[in-house]
Amino acid sequence: MSPGLFNDWIVIFLMMTGFYTLITRGNLIKKLIGLGVFQVSVFMLYISMGKVEGGTAPILTEGVVHYSNPLPHVLILTAIVVGIATLAVGLALTVRIQEAYGTIEEDEIRELGGIE
Amino acid sequence: MITDHLPVLQVVIPLLAAPLCVVLRGSFAVRQFVKVVSGLTFLCSLLIFTHVTRHGAMGYELGGWQPPWGIEYRVDALNAFLLLIISGMAAVILPYGTRSILREIPREQHHLFLAIFLVCVAGLLGIAVTADIFNVFVFLEISALSSYALIGMGRSRRALTAAYQYLIMGTIGSTFLLIGIGLLYMKTGTLNMADLALRMPPPHESSTVIAAFAFLSVGVSIKLAVFPLHTWLPNAYTFAPSMVTAFLAATATKVSFYLLLRIVFTVFGVGFAFEAMHLQLLLPPLALAGIFVASTVAIFQTNIKRLLAFSSIAQIGYMVLGLSFGTATGLTAGIVHLFNHAVMKSSLFLAIGCVSFALGAVDLRAMRGLGRRMPFTMAAFLIGGLNLIGIPFTAGFVSKWYLILAALEQQRWFVAGFCLLSSLLAAVYIGRVVEAAYFHDPDPQLTARPVPRGMLAPLWLLTGASLFFGIFTSFPVGAAQRAALLLLGGAP
Image (cartoon, rainbow over all chains, first blue to last red; front, side):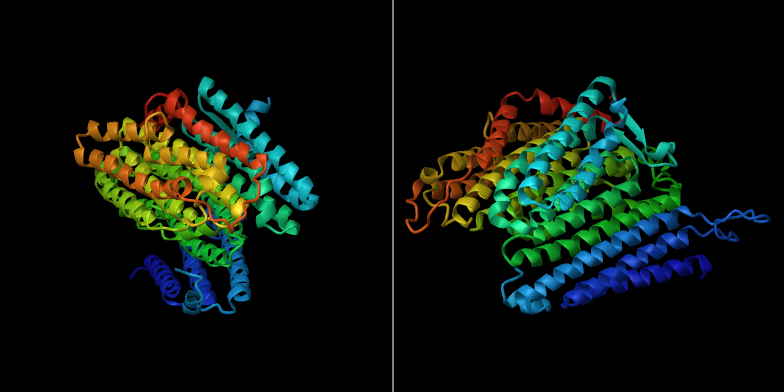
């Protein structure tokens, strides 16, 4: 296994872990945690894609010729902000659901008629 | 010249107006303010549309950075039409909403609600206007996050769980989109859509590009609610406040359809999507299954908003079917239906919003005898329903006509037959509501509050439009044909 692919395996592992948590957990907070892990795996995909072998951080200094590509890193900064916003909205909704139903367990909410 | 800056003003006006709403605070002031803003936004897209029709595509380089490196806004025949639809719907639905929210949203939250609404409008307009595929993701999330919040503000507590479900599904969809964009960037090193199309490696050379295509199309399909990825839609539409349902039904799924068109035709191209990926075989079964399953489920609904939501899923099926032909006629049918469905479905949801305003209930029992008690509202509903069925001289007929033409062009008799057959299902579910409204006596216990003219006027404006464009078809069909030719790589 080349070191290049190692990152990809980590990404896939994290992605599937997050996705599995998202699908199987009934607790609304745990679902959001799964969603977070799922999103973070994509951040890692972007960050490792910008790495140039032998390149350093993209800061102009003397004696350095190869730089890593900074664009994917900048893109993912935006995506991280989006991820935080999503998590915040999700948690706010969970708080409101707790107030309205008195529970954040999916099966209990279903019994109360909140989900079909 | 101000004309050069129109593409960016289109997004900036509602985006900057949103925080101003929060500053203004007072319910009355904010409600007047948003009407002015939506009018300005609509004016902006009208100017863009006339400019693009006369002089061809217009571009805008953000911050003066040249296209392949900087973010570019680019408006051509397709997205000029879409901008017109989104801002037009916002301009009609906001005046309606400023009255309907009086009964649905607590007064002290009006300014926040309308601010989020403007952010949602800005996000949708942004998706339509930008030529940078990463920028699409950002705007998609802006519009999606604001719509989760808007849906969550519905009166029933089930609105909260509906918004949560939508948040989970929507975020999976947009993360898929993000993965797809990343894979494309890995392979091509660019994010500008036109540049991507130039640098796209052929499918047999790179499995990365195939994976990117899969992630992008599945991600957008979740947002578009293509059967079987539609599960978030019925609850979200049923429990959201009236104006939100009408607006999202008219624009959000339409923008996703536009995005699918852009990705399939502009970024990947017909050769890639239809010869290598066989979309013409993959999509029709999903579209037809969506049309039939959703229409059948709609027949058994007692909540009218839910009934219309399932009908929306079926109508999305028609649009996807139009796309799946991959021909000029098919695309014309899809885009015409995008426009017509936006008009007719929002008019239907506005009518139901009026019923909800008057009675506080929208189930089939509440509809009994409404033909006599709320004649204007129910007549509009009836016309909207005839549109859905596709009766001649309504807009719905025009889109079905082009769809069947496209199917016959390729000798797909089955598909054409199914399209006709599915209209019967629409006749059944609309018929149930109409029967309750016109052939039953009203429930004497329910008292109907008078519906303000300010809500009836937008409703009838849209209903009138759906009749007008059923007879004078040159505007939507002309715009759709220009857009279809553009997508297939022809002249303007």
